[in-house]
Amino acid sequence: MKFQAAVLHEYGTPLAIEEIQTVDPKPGDVLIRLHASGLCHTDLEVIQGSLAYPLPIVLGHEGAGVVEAVGDGVSLVSPGNHVICSWNPSCGHCFYCDRNQPILCEVVTNTRPKGHLMDDTSRMTVNGTKLHHFSETSTHAQYTIVPESGAIRVSKEIPFDRACLIGCGVMTGFGAITNIAKVPMGASVAVFGTGAVGLNAVQGARLSGAEPIIAIDVANEKLTIARRFGATETVNASETDPVDEVKRMTAGRGADYVIEAAGITHTFSPAIESVRQGGMVVLLGKTDVQREIPYDG
Image (cartoon, rainbow, N blue to C red; front, side):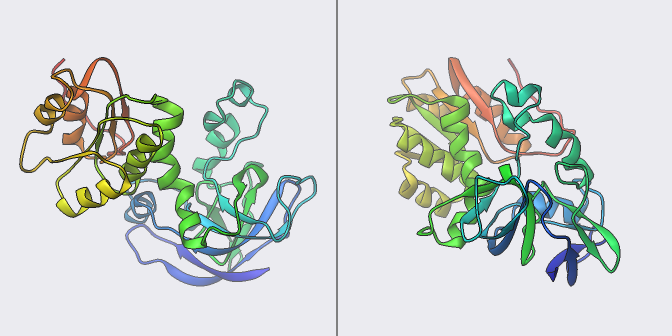
């Protein structure tokens, strides 16, 4: 099967729209016709060369579309289903999957850095050369093949351009609140950084019944949007000390839960300093692979 995809051949160069080829779905595979794909900072890091992946590669890990075909043994989805792509599928039987920690799946941890799917092979070629998959998804294309556990069925009522964002930015921010922090009703939450991930952390805090929900950023327009997503308080960190403001809003103690979603080194320390004794800090923002974070305990 042939289709168009955006291919990265060398770091620091533009993506090339090319005709590539894939095989028919193998057992456990799901072939998806993509209708929308997001662009994440992680994709940009690979393009720039700051995040190493084998080349050539088809990037993209926020995708939504319709199941075109399935391989033998697939039962969770069928042709015609609307799905989103998960960049962290799981095998269901390794050490971590057996302990209800599929995010740490040993099979995916081994195959993802190689640019392979879970059977440790690629499904794509371009002009006879093997193409690598990105995060088991490769959604910057007209079609993609993913493992069955990487195709998540969603309602046909959700527009594709909204659904695709659930695959990374939404689930990262929302999941930090509901799955990692498990924020209870009435807890105070401070979110540093109100981009896509931070806004979804704010939204998760609102749906969890948190109070207050403090959004911190340096851009007033983002803080305005944060209020629409559920923030009860906002702090412009370029105008005032965010640590002082968070403590002022929480009876001088600090927030019960602090989410760092900016991914900027100099926001890590204020985030840590803004949590109360016995509270929890969730560091979501991604900095350079090797970076010292100053903190005066």
